[in-house]
Image (cartoon, rainbow, N blue to C red; front, side):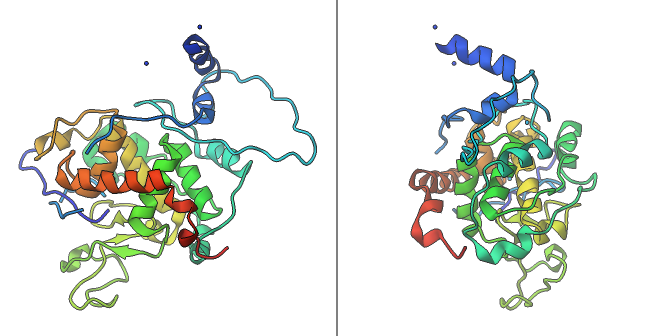
Length: 313
């Protein structure tokens, strides 16, 4: 998340079966479904800062009773769950549930440089986090804890599960933001008050500038109060915070977006619109659309599976 917008002056015989499965199995059935389109497509220039106290760049146990699965044969390989987007305001899986699902079929590390960050858990954020989005958003924020360790791809899978967003969107967006590198610095600026702790002006190789964004999703220090330095120190915390913000947008809590310049009226349920808001700080403006296009490009290419993307195991 590198750019922001300025603070406002005031601020669809088979379908029946699918539905029955969802009713019976709850969110976990949705998590195991094959990937589908999650929202209408929206069509990386600099934009202005979001309201103070907001961030840009931006299943609990199953609802129904699941039947007990037959034991797998000894030596059988567990098929990994594909995590897909859950509807707006859905009951989300807990971090513990998601950790169990991810760890049932763990994947290898392909970003060796992340290992120190991947071993660190995060912590809960303060009440300032997502405060501008209102009480319902702050309830989402209370779920943030970065409480997972594993490989880089498994951390991203865990975050996708926990916040109900298609995992391939997460993979593609993290590639755009940092090439999946937790030590990535970005969002350079000259205002010392927006420098992250330990990163004073000129300290990181750019005279008179400091990084304002950090990590695998480029969380922004000035716009995500109450979560540092854990957001920088822990890959899981970085992803956890970023997709809490995405979910707040997707659930419809960021109504301040309609008080700012925008490409159309903000509304809940637009997964791609909320991906664009993470970068631009505004709703479907040209910067947001350009960013969405880049994430979709990496998604089509599945860039994270290409040889050039692998950097050590």
